[in-house]
Amino acid sequence: MTQEGIDLPGIGDKLLQRLERSLGGRDELIAALDRGDVAQLSGVQGISRRRAVRMVQAHRGDEVDWLVTDDAETLTREALEPFLDRAVTNLGRAQLETLVPATDETTFEDRLAEARQRLDDLADADLDTVVEALEGVDHPSQPRPQPERDVAVLIEDGPALEEVRAQDLDRWVEVATETDTVDHHGVVLAATTGPTPPGSVHITAGQGWQAVPWADRAWAETNRELLEALASLADLLDVDDHATPILDALEAEAVAEPPDLEEIARECVELANETVEQEIEDVSISGQDVLEVMQGGHSQAVQTVISEAQAEARERFKDETGLVGAPFSDEYPLEVDPEGLERLRSEVRQDRAIERYGAARDVAAAVRQHREGVEAMVSQAIDLDRWQAVARAARDLELDVPEPAETFSVEGALHLDIRPEGTRVDYPLPEGVALLTGANSGGKTTLIETLAQIAWLAHLGLPVPADDAEVPLLDGMAYYERPRQLGAGAFEGFLRTIEDLLLDGEDVLVLADELEAMTELEAAAAILAEVVDRLDERDAPAVLVTHLAPYILEHVEARTDGIEAQGLDEDNELIVDRTPKVDVVARSTPELILQRLRNTADAEREQLYDSMIERLER
Image 1 (cartoon, rainbow, N blue to C red):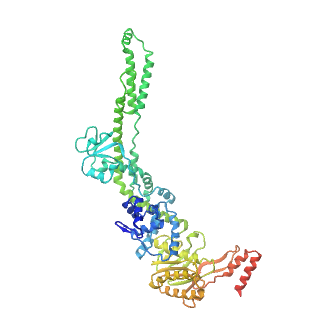
Image 2 (tube, rainbow, N blue to C red):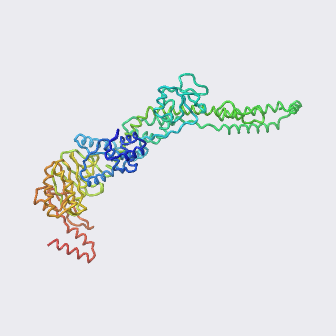
């Protein structure tokens, strides 16, 4: 399906609508495709991870039909697993998953050179520490608006107001252009050029984000873990550290919680009244004092006690709240003045709102200055994740970056599934076709699978399972595993997949395992001879595992290499030289397999295997 901004072959209208709905809209879908967010795309119902990879490749215009057969696709997906398993972030994994093979000499050589350089750069890095830091890396999250309920912002018509509305900043606070529409708010911040409306607080805000800084501040807080991870990785990234300035602004913005004015006022009043009661007991009253008391007043001495207690209460309230003017009555006993308390609460709300606004604006300024740089750091961190995964796979499995060359040869090659332990193999591939012969269970299939892994990973620009490898630029790869299905259908299917290779002459690496199993042996030998003859006309190598080499060679000349078995060891295992000998036809040695089975059989089965061995030796 091709629509504006999106090119997704095979995606119908309904699925496209589901993608947009799940991801939050057309722009969000395009953004996910742009950054190759396979995890997010495959989280949508109906989109597998494999399909998401192809969607990203199609969107980027990177689709390459390099893998000619389904067997090749299966094998190469498995070859990527050691790298994918070591990626920390979804986006780092997606970078590896969406790689496509190089199709020209320059790209091929540049990729291998980059891989060599990046692995050298990470050679001395503490990769475990890098992995720990990368756990906090992801694409920056967009916070959900949480409106400031006690604040309104008054902005005059003009560029600042247009910016606020264009960027949806008015979802974070009530924005108005007329004073009378915000009277119900506790605090009104007025970003006006003229006189400040009564009851509002003037702020200077030439830009919309300065008047409404809470969205940017929330972005910083929402992505704090990401920013901390990026700051810890800064020395390994090829960009300046833009995360730390935002973190510093967040740390500096601490705004103290407002005191509980009512509780403090009540405690001050109770303490003052208790003090008065205690001190009055010790006051000596004169005749004049008695007369004043009888007239309903306080004596001079008592009034002094009350005044001192009131003064102490006001001072204590000021010390604990920082506010001038206590919400107390002037009479005795002292009482909390509700109107005075509410007036102070309003003052605290306004002061705190202004303080929070200023702190948010400082953070917003840092975000506006450094957000683009943070995005660049994220891209670098994801790239670092890709390469640390490659570096750890290379370290753990002893992989090496191959050299681009005219011919294909490997030294110390060993299948990814059994690296780093196991017997390594040296093998120079032919410029044309080689028939690979030899012992059953001698490693022929493992060898051609290893060659497929090496060819694929080299064209992706990744290290390969060999101590040294030289790999030519290839037009593609066709891999045929040993047929699991026999009969005309399997044979016809094979011929249909290989006919183009035999006719168009492209430099496609062909690796095939015992194709003769699909039809009668005599016919298979003749047909495979024609396949060998055609493949040999190209410049690309081909290796065909076969037990029919002597019969094929009756029809065509071809290089024939062999993996030889010398016998059984004390543990009843085959003694095999797994490195093929060039221009040597090696026997399948079925007698060794029979001998191995005989050595572990009971008496009845031992006799059976003896009979089989005897027939072989006739």
